[in-house]
Image (cartoon, rainbow, N blue to C red; front, side):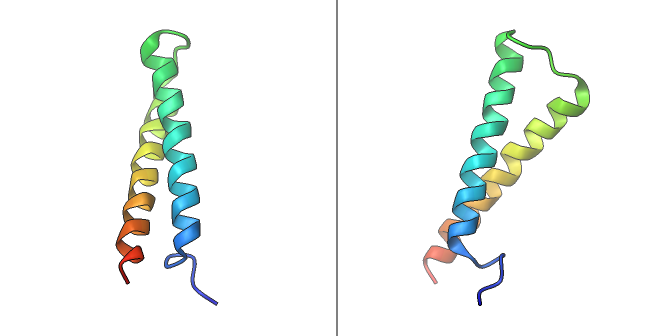
Length: 64
């Protein structure tokens, strides 16, 4: 059984979901639809960052 770090499908799914969710929350905040408090804003940036890292891992493991 592959570990979760090397599981390509897991990296793709979590990367896409976290990037989309974080981007949606940031879009809501910066378009003026809602006003997020500081903690939620930081979490949204963290979701986007970790999602992009998951996608990076997916494409790096794809070559192996």
